[in-house]
Image 1 (spheres, each protein chain N blue to C red):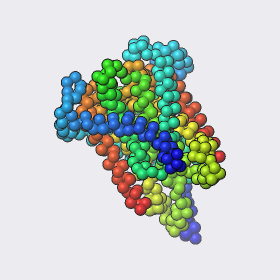
Image 2 (image 1 turned 90 degrees about the vertical axis):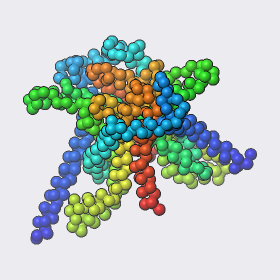
Image 3 (image 1 turned 180 degrees about the vertical axis):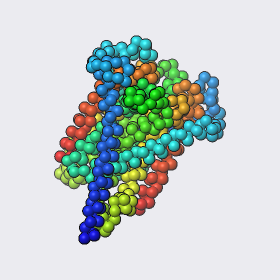
Image 4 (image 1 turned 120 degrees about the vertical axis):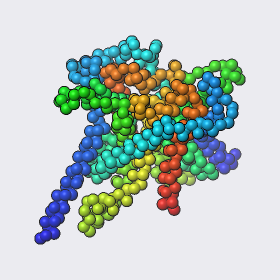
Length: 291
Length: 283
């Protein structure tokens, strides 16, 4: 009898605990998404100040499309289209090179046995944990010394720009590609490749006809990740872009530092939309991979 | 060509390009920064080839100690709040019905794919003097004058928690999901209440996730640059801002290099401890 009453109280308490747990979770998700919704909401506000709702407008988006955000903004001769083009060029080249190099390294680490592997593993791991700012300034120092050296030797004067940004982006993307592709390689059934070898295929044939098709979804995931990381990067770009290498995040940062207007909300909304498309693409890839 | 040679050539073809790239553009630049941190500052922002440890001695000045202390403190506070908020979230997602689980997990992952700068800027819209919070509080007549929310340690801490919360939730989710439910049920059947079960059973079994998540939050939070740059002011400088300042404004590259080396040391210590403990546990 008493134990029955107690367990009823226990159940109530447990239910209360569970509910408060879910309440915290709901609040956590609200915390994650509320600022984003507010940001998007005010991109359609006709008032210049993001405080009160005046009326619905597309003006901020139209202003962006014309390239000029605010003629007084301290972004000389750079319009948003240039920044967008730079961002896309950097992201596409980064994705191609980092995916190729990273996939090859993942295969070398997972499919071959050789001494000193753990050293290379550490080399892959370090760019992920080293603070971005440290990597950024080390690239800045490296390029400035390298360019000085080249100028002294050949007389050719090189400056920071899109190519240096690309080099920086490839450097931090390789590790993420290696980790993503390697995870898939590790869970692959080795019997499949052994069977191909037993049936007379050489290593190249096995790789091309068996291994690569099997890990293809993870290579696409890795490429999408590299693409996103490159598009989103601010810190590495900030230190390696020079004058001609303004990317979209650098452009947005310039706008934020100059003055806060709903035009920033508009450009942010478009960037969020682009990311969302990439997430959908990536999660579709993952579902395919699991099937 | 023997099979062994061919295999060796194949390995070289796969291994060398990425390794060479990382050595050239990652290892060598870091070594140059290490070298710079021991060289004297030259005129016009350059260096002069004289060895010195003055930059490391300069780190102990109160101004710089204060900034480093603030960075570590903000990193720790951020980690704590991410853990307090992230643990219940990870627990709920991991114990949710399977059909909900993936959707909830996707909701955690989406911020990871969206632009960090943009997400940080969102808080500027909310917190600034004429921002959403102040306008709302004033129109409800809770406050007379706008609160100073932006450009404070509070706004920087909030931005850091906001930015790095997903890094806490994901590893926690992974360990909680693998947790053997029967152990929790056994504890409950044996009469342990929820709090006792949590402290004595669930918590010890998910320590790995807690440590991994804490590292993943603490590391980028200590070295943060964008968040204090946008949500912080002159009074909330962190190491990241100081490094930027030395490289782009003051142009004291050797001192900036010494600061970067210090930042790496601050981050590598917990990482090394983590690997030591996980390795001993495995063996």
